[in-house]
Length: 158
Length: 156
Image 1: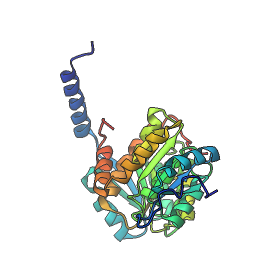
Image 2 (image 1 turned 90 degrees about the vertical axis):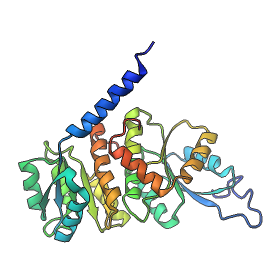
Image 3 (image 1 turned 60 degrees about the vertical axis):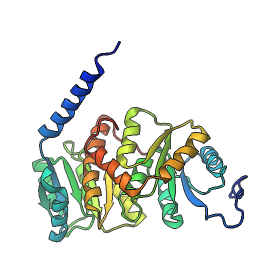
Image 4 (image 1 turned 90 degrees about the horizontal axis):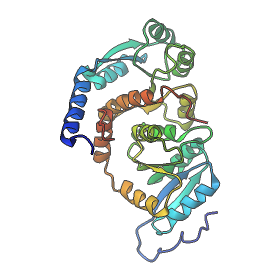
């Protein structure tokens, strides 16, 4: 399954090591769509998990640079996964994206308040996912902390 | 044509300032057998919160039954009972089944985190914690529970 087309593209000579993205989603079809989209640029290696608990296990063993996580999953939902990652100083500043079909305003706000950097709707455009991935990888710990502090204070713009 | 945008902005700003200044202090029940730990939490929470303390499962349940706090922060390892039992028993109390619960513990294994959420905790923070992030998470948790109130059970 790791022999995905495009995954090894662009690996010439002294390229910097590819960043690792963990995808957590209980739908294997969606996982492959995300894997394909994220792998296209050749900048990222993708590891996957199919529920929240397996996601945390993979997070621990793989130490990814970014996580893309669904919300509704067996055993542990995406909000809980995000809170677990944010609640431990060892992982608190990992870039996190929720990619979910739950797109009510309250769902999105719950994700953002849980600490996710971006909340994307399914169905998604690969180009939008890639642009979002680039954006969250640029967020500094200071920027993330400032945003969480603003959200905690009840910033109505968020 | 919409209303005057300048006026709308001013009203929104008034509302924000009003809600910030009129907000009453939130009550937090901190459950931890270690005095050093409760001191750290109290210091981290600062002046914005009325902090109450308990060190055992029984004390914590009594305190919640007497008056449901706005938020509960509990260690997993208590001197009698544990934080998971506390979560489970609180979720059986109709008056406190929506109360935000944060587990704050040195236990950092995935097994512990999963068990914490399964027991009914809403958040799980590993010690040692960053004071500013902790303070923010407390507020964020209160906002999340406000959203969730009408419809619990997001998980599978």
